[in-house]
Image: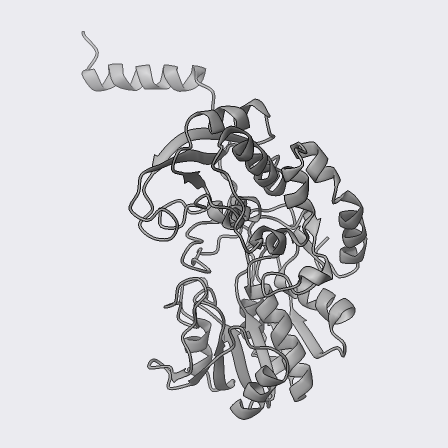
Length: 411
């Protein structure tokens, strides 16, 4: 009797499965709880009897993607009085360098105040005018010094102290892990809104840990600070281990993969090359008119850990080279545990300058503000290679790492 076609196919599939290599099954997500989840689970006890205002944006969501402002507004256990919006706004309607201004939120009727580029006494006056007793902060960070939300945190802590308000930080994971601090440390004379204080370019901390560090090291007078930490988070974990939904913290941070490279490739904002804004892969695609295959080849010759580079051509829909087809590279991370975003960013700057005669820094030396000093720019201009540039910041980085250690919440 001839076997049926189904039996033949089943036997073949079974034989193939027995000889083919198998990938490790993805482990189930442990039940990580964000600071907000723990706050709500405890009945909002730290906010009991307080008139509350919250600094947040579209990333302030629950596991089922409800915004925490909507959740808290509907809960009689919380007296929520105001919302404070950062860069890009509370509901996320503004592009880079913009905010939403002052308005009343249509969904809740709550007054929304604009904190973007406000600090010190003017921001303290906003907190006073809002009538709140406690300011809560809940925003997803991406782990890079020049991502402005951590400086919104710093400015709001300082202003809350000036206004005599309590400050509560609800923690969220660092999406690119909290394993180690990497990159140059800001020099104070280069302080701007993309770096208020001397921390490393990739700080390796959560926002609650940063709040503790800011309060202990940098604020002239510490604020009355309380942090609601994560449970179930490990410092070695990337965002996909959290089981949490990813909400883009800003328009050009669409995925956790973007965050993975951002601490290094954002440095191209300080050059005349596109950093990929206006594409579906910002900070992963880099390029300019006249750049060709030689850049990817030069970068791949360095054999940087965890990453490869592909010759790429793209046409940004806005920002640099809008509507023009340009050449460059796409950054492909194949081993994220081994990948060093800052070293990679420096290597790409060094090789771009070497293979493309049109390479130039932005005239305002924005690269100095991003790296925290003039050292990276001047070393690359002097012909330093990647290892020499990276060696230039190791002493500062070691000092920061020692300071950072005492403020870590997760071991």
